[in-house]
Length: 67
Image (cartoon, rainbow, N blue to C red; front, side):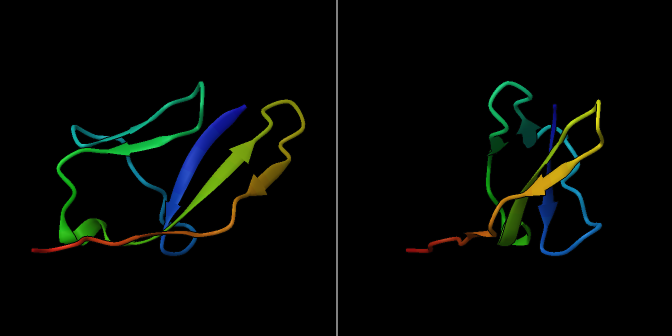
């Protein structure tokens, strides 16, 4: 199984970098130091590497609260 995350719309996959990490154990997406450019809708894609079947989660919105 491979987990990936889509940002806003296909095929804009979230690239892992120094601020973003996708756990291949849990599928969780971790974002450190959230920025306004991170605000949007995230969808988790789970892919079976044997059958190539894919399942998408419902969209999860990320908002940024300001003081």
